[in-house]
Image (cartoon, rainbow, N blue to C red; front, side, top):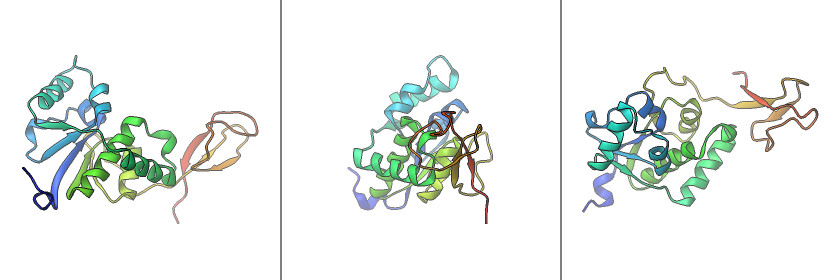
Length: 178
């Protein structure tokens, strides 16, 4: 049985759905690998990457772990502070929460993902990420939300998806650097 001291600084790869879709092969990685139940649900078995992923789970190469609620709440708080909360799915939040949980267990988490919102929040949480088919984000982004019709601006964590003035669906854009 592994103790906490056996895990300190040990790399743990957290696999997001976008990594599976991009063709991530769990059998080529030596480090411990984890994913969440939501990632498993999102992965279709009728593709080669999906079949490879399912086989890796069945063979114990990838561990499916449901993050504890406290870590999920912390991940949501980080996402909200960055303005990414409206753009992260429950699956994305589980991936970030699992990274938090594994860090508290002594691991050094690395998230395999091409999702820019996950990468943005991971950067704020001080986690490494590895994009597969994109270059990944170069710097952390702070967002603002705005109405494309009447141009009213809202803070990134504004609770509604619609403009309070005209009812148009809000969009987001990064705040200017500097």
